Length: 147
Image (cartoon, rainbow, N blue to C red; front, top):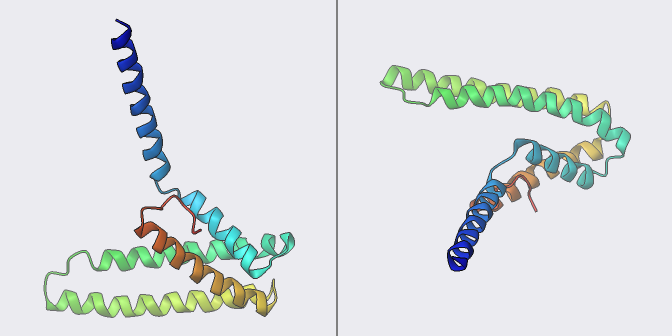
């Protein structure tokens, strides 16, 4: 009787711990965004006041970029013939130009709220963060941070 109880407790503990480990592995967009913003803040040397001005614009830019990225993904679901493939390629080219235009517009907005040096550092920091996050994700460390 005691042996069965012990085995049951151990089995339940393994299930709970396994579920907890799996839960920790799930990607959290909120944690990823918070880690990204913290990384940019640290690397660019933003003051709290600069962060308060910069990040609302940054999130606005990201929202517009995500909409374009979503359309790009939809384009390449499965063109069925030459004509639709050609249209998809041409539309993708237009969307890439739109992404650059969004980026340029927001870089100019950033320059109005923080120094050029800090905008530059924020651009570099964002690139570094995404490279590190992608590298970590490939190693199974996709919990929402780029350490």
